[in-house]
Image 1 (cartoon, rainbow, N blue to C red):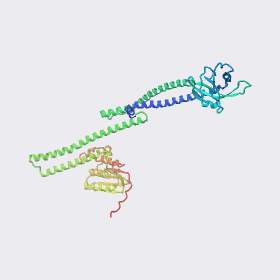
Image 2 (image 1 turned 180 degrees about the horizontal axis):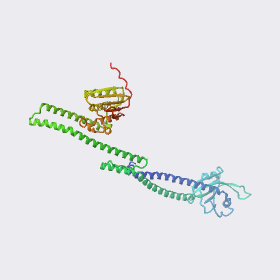
Image 3 (image 1 turned 120 degrees about the horizontal axis):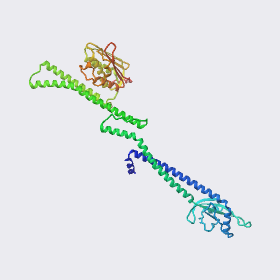
Length: 476
């Protein structure tokens, strides 16, 4: 059984669908044909039985036959018009039949009728000519003359079943022919329907093979209708569009990263070459210049490390993030970030008004995002300036009093590696705000950068609240 199933599964999908349709139609047609044949057979048999019962009215023939059996007259000139054989049966099993007439075998049912135990009987048997017949036996009263008392005997009449078998055979051949034509037509229709229905699947297959062969993600499949195939086509188009966008972003990220890495690497290589040439030639670099050179190397290495860390953070897929979200206190994280910002800008005044607010986020990522926002404010604040940090009802605002951001540059501040023309001389990679936006979005929040009233820039982070965690039990 597994062999045929394996061969069927090896067929193309359209062939399997056509075979399935043909099989289903064949089963249905076979069931209908069989039902039609059996219903017709039952109707013909019922009609024959009714005809046999109606022959009891030909009493003249029976009287002549009885007279012939009693030796009074000659055999009757003809048979019943609706019967093939007529014979008279006595209670003792004796049979009277006209000459040259097939004899019917006597059954127990016939003897029961002759003995008066039953009024009639119907059964099927084979006569002396080996012809299959339908026999009807009933009681009949015979009387030779008025002086002789009447006698109750049984009369058996028969008709050949060929009257039924021939029409049934013809009907069977007709049904077989019609069923065969129907099955073949159903198979052809199933194949046509399968080809028409699977044409979008063929187009999708060709598109997938084209993408796999050429890596061309601009391929789109026309979408028609609202069925499952249309949904599959839309999903494929969305997938290729997302892949194309992802590939473009990846290529842009690599290009931007290479561009950003080139500058500190070039400067670092220049400084290292100066130190190496000094050692090779034996010409010592003045202590102050050497100290400045080493400070520059250290700053460039720090910048490279920061840039690489930012790139790793951006390149990490969301699905691969192993850190689970936790309910954390945003006010505590902000307070820690403010303390770090004060160390980086000791000449600045940083005020903090932090109302309690709990959020569900990754602690390390959220702390880094807040630190990046504060570092951005420290970077662009003038010496002696003020930075205001406020956390109220889930909105964290960080406002500086720096030069601000032009309106035409605001839409680009969260793009990777984008840096304002006025900030290109300042340290940084242009990735800080991109990381902030990603972290805030992962936590279900939103971030906005806008001009502050009276000058400067205000960053607003809005995060949905989470239930406050229960206090820890005291240890003792």
